[in-house]
Length: 140
Ligand code: ATP
Image 1 (cartoon, rainbow, N blue to C red):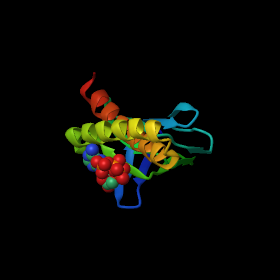
Image 2 (image 1 turned 45 degrees about the horizontal axis):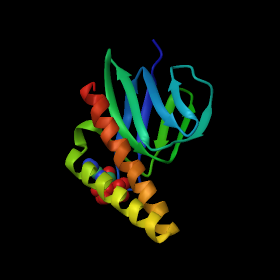
Image 3 (image 1 turned 30 degrees about the horizontal axis):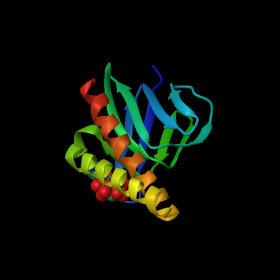
Image 4 (image 1 turned 180 degrees about the vertical axis):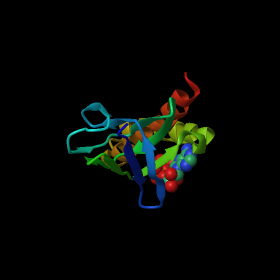
């Protein structure tokens, strides 16, 4: 049966290299997009969220933080700002990042600091994507 080959690259490292999977569910900026073998060529922007892969009847979950996904000839390539397997996510760190960014957001609201507001909003999205990914991996 036809399959997909998935690669996920960030500026730091290659998180997934040529992994053979049967389905990719990715968080595009327009909502979740499902890629099966034989999918038409596609380029889409990704939001911060969870990317799910299926292989051998089991699922795997990764956080992806922004970037792009390209699909062509059953090759799926994700270029993300950051990405981690659920198993590699430090949940306590993500909770700290969430709490800090919520505090920053409240300071930004009080002071009207738009730059802080934007940075805190982005940091909160990254933290939420990581926490959501570990939850989905745990089947919550
Ligand atoms: P923090 O404030 O905890 O550093 P961040 O959202 O600012 O979080 P990023 O800039 O997105 O972090 O990522 C920096 C590097 O740290 C990347 O290599 C990313 O994969 C890694 N990283 C960030 N948060 C976590 C986490 N909770 N668990 C594992 N790796 C993480």
